[in-house]
Structures are given as structure tokens and as C-alpha cells.
Amino acid sequence: DGGITQSPKYLFRKEGQNVTLSCEQNLNHDAMYWYRQDPGQGLRLIYYSQIVNDFQKGDIAEGYSVSREKKESFPLTVTSAQKNPTAFYLCASTPLTGPGDYAATFGSGTRLTVV
Amino acid sequence: AQSVAQPEDQVNVAEGNPLTVKCTYSVSGNPYLFWYVQYPNRGLQFLLKYITGDNLVKGSYGFEAEFNKSQTSFHLKKPSALVSDSALYFCAVRALNSGNTPLVFGKGTRLSVIA
Image (tube, rainbow over all chains, first blue to last red; front, side):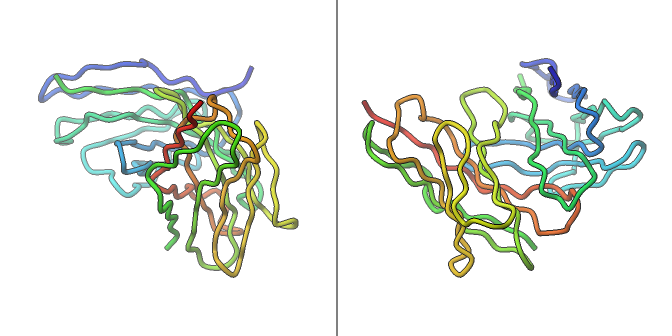
């Protein structure tokens, strides 16, 4: 079955460490997105990418970095500059063709905790 | 700029009663509107979307939503709630013909169905 795989499901980070969250999709979708979810704040966009080797900042990009070297993969690095990284991180994807009426497909998320 | 408001953080309903989860939106031009459901520690699952046409949209698990352009609303409804419907619900919007720009989400409404 096609879908989005996020790994790991749970991740623990020490102060000052960089950590990378994996997101892989086999849906042949062009666009991929990273959202951060905090209680009571909904989903906030971190970064998105519509084509390989190109990406744009979202609303809360500071302290995060991404790469898009392959269509299937869109890893997110949480750097030591992100002062409050404890959150639930969701990856999503959509096809790029069409007027924009496609629903996004989501992965099952990674819960990051600072210890 | 696009935005979504979900005015209720929490909705409680007795099993078997009808339920409504409210959503209002702001977008330039016509909208694409989406509802998603999230169970604990999981990703978002697509429920239904409004693209064009009939204002009453039917989706998964017996849910439906009514688009009201004059009130800029897209309320989620179900005639008879089940305990298993208890979850976090998100409304999202994207402007018509905006390609695959990222969805903008509301803050979510927690639905609790009481047996």
C-alpha cells in the first residue's frame, strides 16, 4: 500500500544536539510538508517542498533545516538553535498537478522530547 | 492570507445524539475546505472535502459537512455520534487555484462522545 513513513515514532534529544526526523513516501507525490503540533495550537507549517532540490520556509522555520535530494524523501533536522523542540512532528504530501483540490496524506508522526 | 477558526476547543455529546463541530474560514476568492480526524499519537486522517457543487458534502464514517459561503463556514456534522468518534478534529483551507500551497489548519476541536 502507498503511504508516508515517518521514523522514529519516538525520539529523545539532549540539550544542544541536532536530531533528524525521517519522512519517506511511495505515493509519487511531488510536494511534501513538515508540520509541528503542540497542544492547543493546531498544526503549524515548518517547511515545504514542491520539487526536488527546492524548499520554502513555513511559519516557524527558525531552528529547523530540511533537504530534498530525492522525490521520495524529505528529512527534517531539528537543530540546537530550536529552543523548544518538544512536540509532535507530522510529515505530509500532495500531488502537485491540478488546481489544488487534493487532500494531503499524512504520516503517523514523530514525538520528539528533550531530556 | 488564509485562516481557519475552530471556535470550540472541546465538544461533548452523548452517544446517539447528533454532533456538530464548527469551522469558519477566511480566504481570498473561493476555498477548498477539508476536515481531518486525529486519534492519539497518530497522524491526521482525511474525512471529507468541499471543492465545488453541492453544499452538503458526505465523507467517511458517516460524517458530513455543510459549506455556507455567506457565513464562510464549513461545519462538520454527524446524525448519531458514536463513542469511537471521540478524537481531535481539524478543519483546513486552501484557496482555489493556488496549486498545492500548504493547507492552513485550525487549532482543532476535541470531540468527546459519552456513552
